[in-house]
Amino acid sequence: MTAMPDRRGPTIAISGPPGCGKTTYAKRLAQDLGLDYLSAGTFFRTLARQRGMTLEEFSRLAEKDPTIDLEIDRMTLEAGLKGNVVVEGHLVAWVLRYVADVKIYITAPLHVRVRRIAEREGRPIPEVLRETIVREQSNWSRFREYYGYDITDLSFFDLVVDNTYLTIEETYEIIRSFVEKRLSKTRGQAANRNT
Image 1 (cartoon, rainbow, N blue to C red):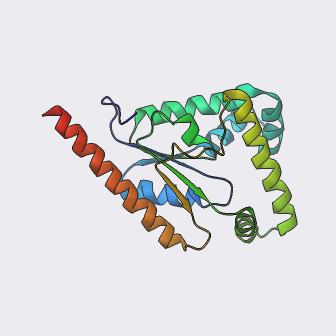
Image 2: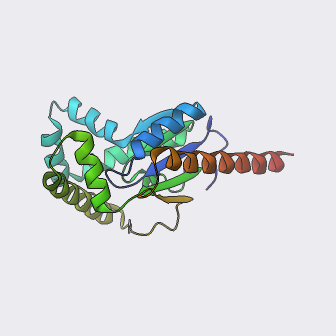
């Protein structure tokens, strides 16, 4: 589905596994395009704060209580429907599959992503590796259980970027160039329909 006429501007969904750089690219893209930036992780932290829980406590609760993920997905969908936003998160593109004007998936092999996280957070690689594997498997299994989605199927994405051998700048230029062309084409098609 393309942009809905009642929205103020485009919705761009950026997904990918931990350590792929999606937050960096989403924030920068939002700033450069004059769009709002939202993170599913921020929604998660907000809900934890509202319940007076630490992130660790809330994460354990989320594994037992599907209403938490469903609430975050509802908030994600609501933001996407408003438009004028770049939304990022591990699974947001699936939630916004029929709403987002552009859906981007960023990835890199597990060992590359784990090294990036470990360097960024100053933590030992074995610890980050264990945590990342558990986190990914938990996310994937819950999403399959709640929605029946196969998150290994990336066929609905408009752009898939493996940034293993790319710098941050090279990856960002690919993303920005693609988004600008895609939005320009979408606006042109909308203008033709209205004439």
